[in-house]
Length: 338
Image 1: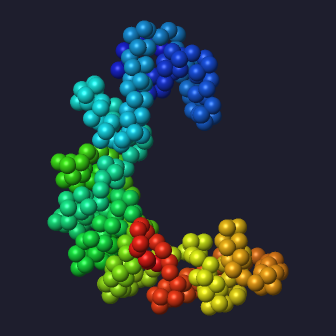
Image 2: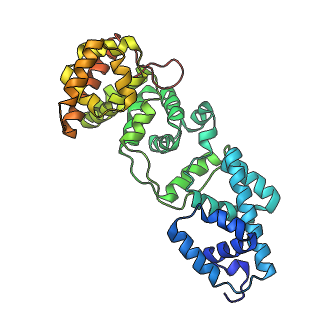
């Protein structure tokens, strides 16, 4: 390697200088955490180093030390905390360089700062924004946070925002950055350089799992009018068969009575031990023995048949919950939703 300033070195060259500077014992420990391809590339880079200039060594070590500190600050208090501490210690420009490099490697999601904020604070700040802006922000928040905020928004907006989250696809970094800057006056911000996938059916399901049952029903009823297929897809994913482990014994016994035995057998055949154990514990010994024998002789089953059987059981669970015969506790606090 020809003599270069540390600022001129590539990432691999800096890594080689760092490991050489740390010594063989530390380097060997680092190698244990690398893939074979990474070890091969790094070893090749190290083998090409003839001499490490003291100035380059010191600059690389200092850069590594600063990045390690920044990562520690992020784990302690998030990007905003790390930014504040680094700016005080290193100045705005150097702090930005370190954070941009680190957040890129960590793939920090947009609105990381907001996920540490109080939902009521976020609500006060975004409730008068355009529904698409609100939808974008909620899709990046923790589902419990987003559910609480969605519950507090005007009822006429709730279904619209839920639908926007469900159909949301990738969003450009320019738009994300612009929306983040709306919050920057009160909360710290972070920047992503890549197009980021967010929203979609799973995102809106997670959000709806954080709202109260009344809000969920209002939103789904409105979506059934606006987009019946979307509403049905969301309802299918609101409660999956494996969630039966969250129900109490009385509810499980009630569900067993209403389900077809064949549906239960198909569903249990591919379920984990926890699901089987809790269902079998709510059957009589004779019924358990009969189920196990029939499941053993059932042979291979089609995934489609299993999914259809589980869907029928989930539909029964939702019907029993709607009629008040069982309670399905979801979300936070005392909210009861499916």
